[in-house]
Length: 180
Image (cartoon, rainbow, N blue to C red; front, side, top):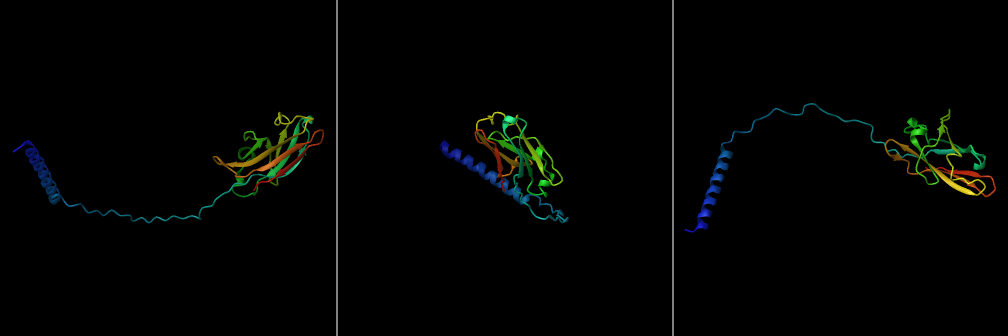
């Protein structure tokens, strides 16, 4: 008898012993306990469905002041309102829920008052707010976008755009295009 065959017999013997012990544990194990547990309380879910919201930017209604930066003070005064006086816009405020981007700068708040009795807000662009953009006698053009922002990080996918154009040695014009 060589060492390998003796080692094999020992391993086979150990495996056979483990097999017999496992078989005995299965055959002589106590039966599983029965239980009376069950769900007896009916649960029902209800609701009116899911409603999706697509934010629309503020709608510009008029530019009531559009003047040269040489005069100082208020350069543009813009009136606007929310697209609807219904949810989700009923709880919005100009300070918290609108952002303006002036000539490609970062989105920011611009001084705004309102709403009036008709839900109209008034935003004022002053010479100090626009400093550096308007050069006086030289012609200049810039655009400002406004968007709705709400909750945490939600913004309207489109913007309303306000454009200021002042030809050389002439009176400026202000125009707007509303996003939808």
